[in-house]
Image (tube, rainbow, N blue to C red; front, side):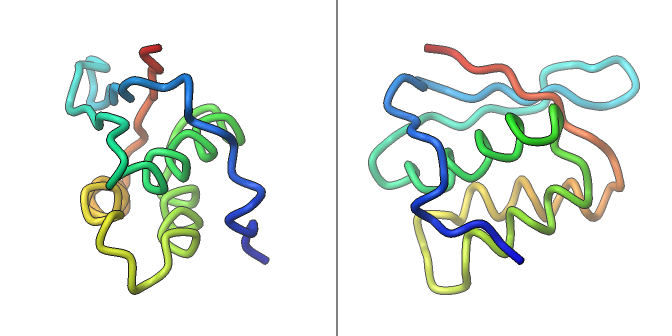
Length: 96
């Protein structure tokens, strides 16, 4: 059962999410909290809080939370699909 959108945490305090991965846990990307990406940032932040990292299993949950018709989740969808394809984990750092 997926979490309803209303259960996602507030991301008003989040300026940007940084993602670290690979064998050396290097910075591999970021996502700014802009109005058009707020829902996607909330999904990624929720996954990081719930699981500690974004794993392939968490990424599948995140894709379900994004839904299918949301264009504002395109950057988030790309991040989650990449995690699944690579079978790797992403650590998330929050910049306030």
